[in-house]
Length: 233
Length: 267
Image (cartoon, rainbow over all chains, first blue to last red; front, side, top):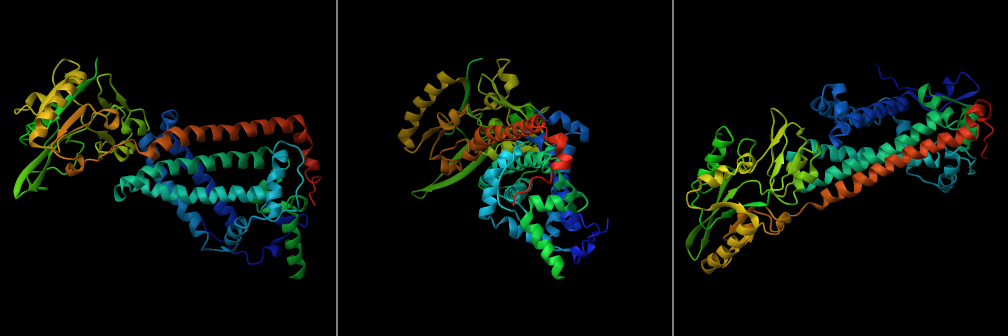
């Protein structure tokens, strides 16, 4: 598969005036490589975590095969997504990083109001940027979870090269990272698949575009900026 | 079966390594290529095929050399870190105090080896399973002594009821302390009380043993806090989603989601 993420000016690619580009090809590729690898890693990892899940490993040829898959996919999980920050058009990856580490007052207001919305009611919060407060927290869990699960995983993989005192700590760190990311993933999937108000966002991660209506109502600050950039270009 | 004990009296040990050979013979373990490590020691560590070996330390005091010899094998801890760490419920403890690995269940994850304060279990890289001293559980359960105890000529190894042998060990200690004031019992309290209990002639550190072996804090945190609390957290996320779906259903949000997804203006 050719990795062509060169989108010089995404705004020019807009064909439908009722749609706005939310995620470039590169961003979507990173998201889906991360997501698919995460689920494969979660499945194969659960086989080692607990005897409850061990019988399910017969589906991939047994626990030893599952352990091999776990290591192989771990490399994809780390290397492919890591590379996306440097090849193609990594600008949006870095913008995402910068954005999620800039947790504003508006984000906090979103997060405190969001539980109501989560359960189907209406939450009131100020206009949100490209990533709202909840998305930033999900991103932070993903970032820190991925970093810690990678570091602890490397220590576990190459255990003989590290002192036992460090390897012993890698186990709880690996599990804790997995638990945080799994809990976040459950919420994330609910919002994109089963939450009627947030569900339109899914299109942005599939074909890149969301409706202007959705953009205006959920990410007004971002939408206004994109419109400004378009008008000024 | 009552709690058993093997008393390893290092003051009587001559370092003949017959225990090593008897273990190999009874357990049908092949000989491995060895080389000189230090002094008379030819085995550096446990392997999946070497479950017991002799360690030798040459200790110089007042221009006189003394051998500190110790038969190394699994301690069979009452509070075994390996058992707690095992991912696959493959390690169990018998009433007699033996810690044994079920090789049908073992998947070779290595959590036992990393968490054992003595680094005892070792993996067979070919079949991805961990091996260690069984304490000759099958002999013991048939009223035989473990192979190493059976063969020991100088009587450095003794097998019997823990309550009886522990008293005997303490009596022996007072005697040995007359000539070796630093002598001490190792394994009475350590790891909840070990089945292989030692009379050492010096501090455990001198033998390369941890002075205070414990279940690692990381292991307790992992198994008793992170895993159960994490399970609840993941379950909680799932429950929140179920409630969320139900709430959206009851509010009729799914029916109208097509047309009113944009009514929700926040600005």
